[in-house]
Amino acid sequence: MTVTTRTPLGRLLRRAPRYGINAAAVPLKPGIPTYIRITDIDDSGRFAPNPKVGVAHSAAANYLLGPDELVFARTGASVGKSYLYDPADGELVYAGFLINIAPDPSKLDPRYLALYAQTKEYWDWIARTSVRSGQPGVNGHEYATLLVPLPDMATQKAIADSVGDVDQLVRSLESLIAKKQAIKQGMMQQLLTGRTRLPGFNEGWADLQAGDLGTFKGGSGFAPRYQGASSGPIPFFKVSDMNNDGNELFMQRANNYVTEAQRKSMGAVLLPAEAIVFAKVGAAVFLERKRILTAPSCVDNNMAAYIVDKSRVDVRFMHYFLSAFPLSSLVATGALPSLNGGQLRSIPIVLPTELDEQRAIAAALADADAELESLTTRVRKARAIKTGMMQQLLTQSVRLSVEAAS
Image 1 (cartoon, rainbow, N blue to C red):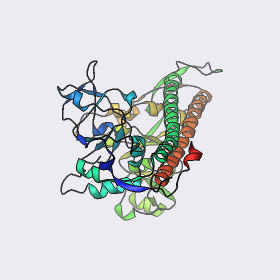
Image 2 (image 1 turned 180 degrees about the vertical axis):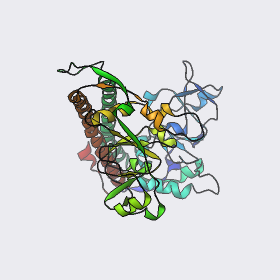
Image 3 (image 1 turned 135 degrees about the vertical axis):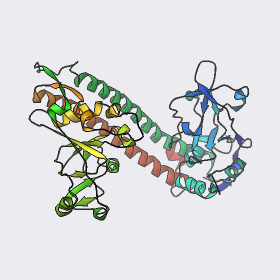
Image 4 (image 1 turned 30 degrees about the vertical axis):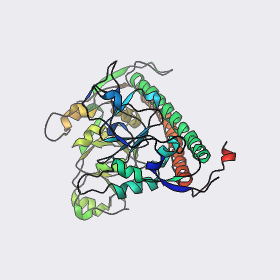
């Protein structure tokens, strides 16, 4: 294997970088190509529009992405993002804030370049180069100066193949997760409405309101002088704590804790374990996150809690039910989205009168969640492996044996 050198990207292209076309996006319909914009590229370098849009312009055909070509974002917060054209994505016309980069296949494997554009080394270069007095940006001339670590073509291909295998695993797992999520969604629609009954249950279902089955309590003001303790006997949760790792379902870790004396000093309500908490004020209402407390806790006044009568309702069943119910549909149009007690108490609830049936439904859905979590963990590990491989192979801190990889 030849010694790896660093070569300016401009010397590895079959033509100079090209800027895209500025045009208005239009609804996608037969006969017009798809428009790819900065916002249509995700952080892993995939074309992921939501939704797809088209472009109708007399010069659109001159800006079609070709095989083995990439586009790089040249301005704004997304500067540096890149996408390697995949013919499976259809005809793509690249927008004006994207730069078309066409590697010379005799010098640079396009897949290798796409992988390099995901490394820390590359993003460090973007951070240094994109500094502007106004909006950050990297132009075509600057992209041409990017120094690419360049092993021989056989090694480039071996690296791209090796990392590509892991990437394919990630994609297949993500596809499986999407299918399992759709299955779970169907299960929820059937089981939580009684359209499908689990074997062995024949008792009736009741039409009630949330206020018939429990009580809603608002959160409490959190005095700044008591904030900041990373440990203590009582968690004091804020809306942002729902984002903490490990708090995806059960609220297990807070960013703030208080003592009983501090709680009493603030007059903060102590909510019981297994209360279901959610955002009640602000844009966070529309995120539709519902969590279950694992210990007696306080929540701030941007949150509320639903405390169910456990002699009539299984907590996990009710959590699934509320997860399927859009609380944001209760929000009145106004300057500040908010939920009030009257709205919450009037939520219509249909549920089995037998607690055992509620528990069986919750268990079936929990099994589906456990399978999804297992798959998600596998994806997380595979992504970590991919990141490590790219960092080591593309910066040549570890060299790949071409013979072993072939």
